[in-house]
Amino acid sequence: MTVFSRDLARKEVATGLTAVLVGTGLPCAAVFSYQVGRLGGASPVVEVMSGTIARGFAGMGTSRFDSNMNLEVHILIYDGDENNPLTEPGREDAADQIEALIAGWVSTHQRGTYYRALRFSGDHSERAGVKMLDGNPYQLEILKLELEVPDL
Image 1 (cartoon, helix red, strand yellow):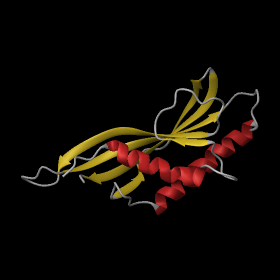
Image 2: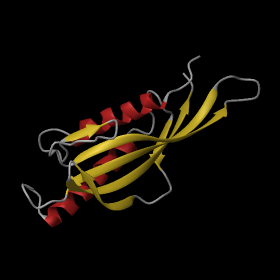
Image 3: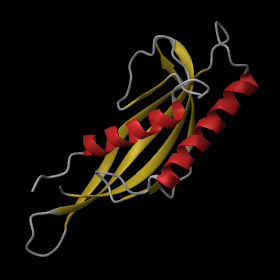
C-alpha cells in the first residue's frame, strides 16, 4: 500500500486541462501544475495548485486512507494596456471562456487515475482582482475543486 500524495492528482488534472486549454485556437498560453513566479509575458495562463487535504481511515483497523482534497485553479489574464492583444472586454470574455472549458472538462472527467470523484466545491469562484507578477498586473479568478482519493 502506498499513501496517496496530492501531487499525483494535481498533475493529472493539470495535464487534462492542458489538453482543452492550450494549443491552436484554444485560449491559454500555458497550464502549470504549480504556482508560477514569473510568466514572462504569457497570458492567459492557468495554475493548478494543491489545497487542503483531510485524511480519514478507510475503515476500523485499516492502515489505508480515504482522503478528500481540494485543488485551487487560478486563471490569470494580463490586465495591462501595454502589448496586450486583448481589449478590456476581451479579457473578461477570455476569463469566462476559460472557466467554461474547465467546467466542461470537470464534467467529463469525474473519475481519474488517481481520484475516484472530482467536482467543483460548493463555494463560488473568487475574483481576486489584480495580482502582480513580474511587475505586471494580472486578473485573477480562483476556482476550487474537490477530489476523493483513496490510497493506492
